[in-house]
Amino acid sequence: MAGLSARAVEVLHVVVPLEMQPAMQALVAKFRISQPEVAVDIAATPSRRAYADIKRGAPVDVFFAANRAWPQRLVDEGDAAGPAVIYAATRLVLWSIGPQASGLTLEQLTERQTRVVAIPSTETTVVGQRAAEALRKSRLWGRLQSKLVQGQSVLETARFVRTGGAGAGIVTAAVLHHPEFAAQGIAVPVPSDLYRPIRQAVVITRHGQAHPAARGFVDFVLSPAGRDVLVKHGFEQPDETQAAR
Image 1 (cartoon, rainbow, N blue to C red):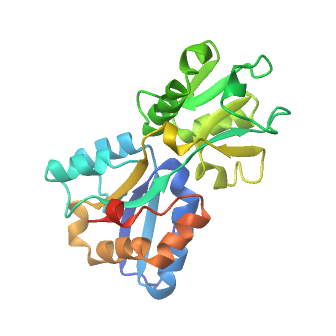
Image 2: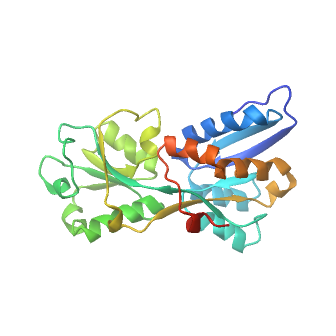
């Protein structure tokens, strides 16, 4: 979380998905090189909860979500200062740090040596829903039911794997850039034709429209410099159609 410097005259309150926190810290550091008078307060929380907090009146200026649905709801309900804009795309990966990690495939999840497979919640997370979609399309969903455990977030799911609670898990490429998981195990991309794209959106809230720096910060994140930071943290650039405002 960025502190308020002596020169800062404006504080932006920004909410991001849990797995985006390291990337956002890097974005804020780069943004403040040219905008030292703006401090950015980062809160990392599940997007569903962030949406509920904003609806209850939490002083959030910019809402970066793990999908497009929650920002779009704010737009539809009149609680946003502009449209929901796609800022990144998310790639699913199969991750393991166990001895079976080498050459890991979705099909191998059914084998005896992998006793527990972790995915994010299929009820509350888009990543979990897409993971289930990939397993169904691979005709593995039914075969894995006795092995599946679900984390409340992508971060919790990755922790199941890191601590040995699961032999493998389906998470996102971005979460593996978190310091807690970086440079551990083997991650294999889940074929993109097995699940619908996961597009992440940002919106300036109605509260944020009173802060001119909110637009400047979002524009920076969407700029080539900002997107370079996102890519370095495991996010993918959306194509021009996806990113259209």
